[in-house]
Amino acid sequence: MPAQPPTVMHTLVDLAAKECKRAAEKLSEANQLLKDGQKNLTMLMDYRRDYTQQLSQHLQAGVFTESYQNFQGFLQKLDQAISGQEKVVESCKQKVEVQLKHWQACERKKLSYGVIINHAEARAHLVQLKKDQKLMDEHALRQSMKNMNKVQSR
Image (spheres, rainbow, N blue to C red):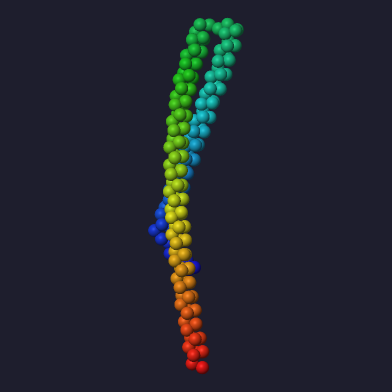
């Protein structure tokens, strides 16, 4: 079968593939932001745990009221930072979910176009086979008629 020129559907598949690639890149970026946000949250929580342990050690050794208040103030600021980072992580999770759904929709669209093209090509192939069969039948009929004419003319 000769190579066919690109059809509108092939163009649509190409465009859908490009859209899928862009969606995959955005999904990757969103995943990286989520990973970075989770890393920062873990770091803040680890820092808070370590700082709380230091406070506990200082309390056992005895600490002045002013130092204790400084520790408490700093812990409050760490808690605020942790809370803010938790919101960032949650926002990143939502962005990942949105980008994942977009990428999946792009993939479905691209696959749908591919299925449509495959069905159209299969129908075209079937039509071509029928044409070829008809031509072969007509040729065989003509040959048969020719042979009958030769036999009758003898």
